[in-house]
Length: 145
Length: 436
Picture 1 (cartoon, each protein chain N blue to C red):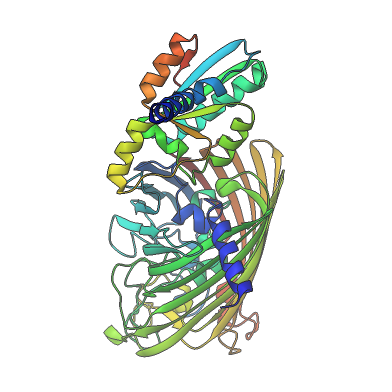
Picture 2: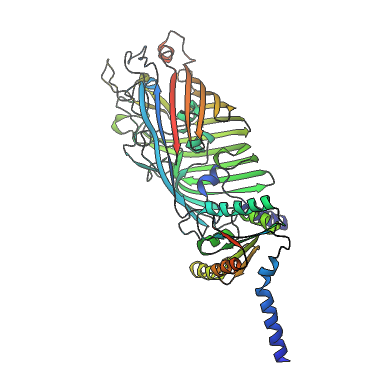
């Protein structure tokens, strides 16, 4: 029974790890793009959201699969209360995904003295750069606005 | 506290977290949450050319001397001057970007104007403040910054649509600091920088967004010593401000909307009477105002009405440039202050963009100064015709022609106050602005 429980937990945890990748599936997507935001510059924050929006507008929400990966200072884009929160929500409704680097979250926690609260659309990934490499190997085009 | 009050406070708190830079209080005192730089360097330069006919004082004890209002400020040495009116550089942001609850604003003035020239400072800090955004609905700004008063003074100067302020704002709101009231035979000059619509102190403020409306409040407690560092007496000023704005669209300093506002400033000034300048004592200084601004599409309009009670700038002896020797008795012309008198004034202002890059402007302003006595009352009215050509979003050329009139209603046309008033020239100005 104990072994069964452990097996069940393992399956559940693997499922949750794959949640981001599986939720990303857009069966009719013809283009796959990963956008990198690792810069603290507010203009870059706006720009990366603009690029995502332009991709959705050009190809259509079902035809393009977009994920924004935030790490380093760029994680500020995904902090709760961000001035861009409503845009993030709008893009999320159109299927754009937001990945937040756990390493950066840990670094921010150390600096802040508490864990930063992220927008609800943000999904933590083990490392932002690893996430980008993984997506690239799956055929995603990396764009760094 | 009843449930309704708790719900109201909770609602206000919730709303406050949804708002960000969108009006002067917020634009100058806050930063966009989690989207501001650690240190954003910015500033602007305003070179200009101003000219009058340079008419001399037509009558009175200083007849034949340069007439102060016909001389270009702040130097008072020529009726035709090229000048760097403002040259400001500043830095603002959130020093520790991960904590967006603390932001700062610093701006220094290197131009030639009432701040640097009268203050004899060369360079002066015009703004140096820190804002704490920890309490929902009650942001706290501490330091040196613009006071929550008249729109013409509170607005960012680089989006000001004219070269010169209206009479009512210039004379009633742009505070001059002197030792005395100028009633004695000694010279009474301006001793430090003009107030520049600023004060050092603490301000509690915030903005609440409700559908398309934005409501803002500010309460401030300050030195009452303008832009000048330190305090000059034990008296403090209080400020109360409210605005409600229906937002049509856009953002920043040129956001479109209909804004209504009212405010009060209350304080006491101390005159030492040093150098036999007269009027030593303490005097109350109160200012009140209300107004509205409108901006939609090609159209722009503004109206303000203000009143003053006490410590009102009253020009100079015989309209002479302060410090000019009186040919009859050798006394130097002083700056005068109406310590216990009243004044009021208003302006209406219209702008219309005839082309996307060209706006035509028309402004009419009135000041009734010294209304408590027949002999002391002076009426000023000015019609300003203007044009702004926007070279790009960050630079423009402004041309103004001011048709200026002054009258002393308690005197006949043949008496000196009105003869002197007739010497007031129109003023032409061209200003170039570049923001970086």
